[in-house]
Image (cartoon, rainbow, N blue to C red; front, side, top):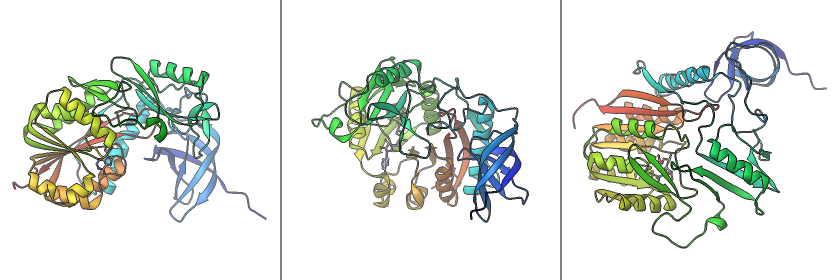
Amino acid sequence: MRTAPPVLELSIDALAAGGDGVGRGPDGRVVFVPFAAPGDRLRVRVIEERARFARGEIEAVLEPGADRVTPACAVFGRCGGCAWQHVAYAAQVDAKRAILGDALARIARLGAAPAIEFTASPTAYGYRGRARVLVSRGQVGFRQRRAHAVCAVTSCPLLLPALDRALGALAAAPPAHDGEWELAAGSDGRVRVAPLDAAARRRPAAREAGPDAIELEAAGERIRVSPGVFAQAHALLLDTLAAALLEAAGTGDTVLELHAGAGFFTLGLARRFAHVVAIESDPDAIRDLAGNVAAAGLRQVRVVEARVEAWLAGGEADRLGADVVVLDPPRGGIGALAAAALARSPARRLAYLSCDPATWARDLAVLLSHDWRLARVHGFDLFPQTPHVEALAVLERTVST
Ligand SMILES: C[S@@+](CC[C@H](N)C(=O)[O-])C[C@H]1O[C@@H](n2cnc3c(N)ncnc32)[C@H](O)[C@@H]1O
């Protein structure tokens, strides 16, 4: 006979990096609870027990915390996109700042980190300029939480109004073939709806972005981005993010830009440095990048198609001798070997932008174990209603090379 899982009453102290609320059970063990808000008093059913922590589900909200609010979306909890619509926006910002501080203390093992500057989103909803949706058997939506099935939607409150209208139109007349589609809004307000599956994307080899590219403007530069190529998703913070990264990079002779994408930062870097070497591995992004650099008439940019890790392992950073390095990797970060190669390069400043505080802090730990110090940390809330947060670290050499 199976015994019923234990039921606990607990208070939620904070929000964890993964998005769950965190409280302590009667034995002092940490309990992670999805959809809990700070200050909540909850009755929780324990569904998983480990030696050092447990996971539970809310059975009842006995007393809501002061920061618990009503979610804006009818499918919140079922859709895998959002985890924090039940938390007031100001409390989300506090939690993200704490998540960055925690990553620096626990993962980067920094005793004394600089104060974290933080840029909140100007709006808690209606900010996304890019989204991927699934089309499956006449339904359009996002992946369900912890499942592969589609959570059908006709609207999403995170999207820019124009993008939300495009989602509604797609849902009203779903395309015949199933797969992933991308909705993207350009800075001029034009919206592109494009399929992403390989067959639909196969096109003749082109040397620049095609007619289905969107145009993004930030910090005085303009780039074109093709379907499937990475583009920053928070449409209202493009300028802020680009300006912050460019300021962090400063000026100089040579900058090495890793993970350049379609060139969101590359053009601005080229106005500040005599030489830019931009590394990117996605062939579609490389084509957009090369086209954007050429359209801006910037001859001082060398575009290199390579995987950063392999490029660094080949000793290229040492040979290049850039005085500044900028990197903006995907969630997985760069890893210990690449971080060590960068640490040993002759650069004097490094700006590391990331959308994953845990891998960012892990890579920073490697860099900071060499002769580097953390000069500045800046968080950006590019993902309101979710636990995701963008982080920029500026590192400087402690000794001259
Ligand atoms: C977070 S995006 C940033 C792109 C660009 N900096 C921007 O802001 O638009 C990360 C980029 O790294 C590229 N990338 C992923 N893994 C890579 C690797 N191992 N080596 C080089 N580039 C990689 C992706 O194709 C993507 O364009």
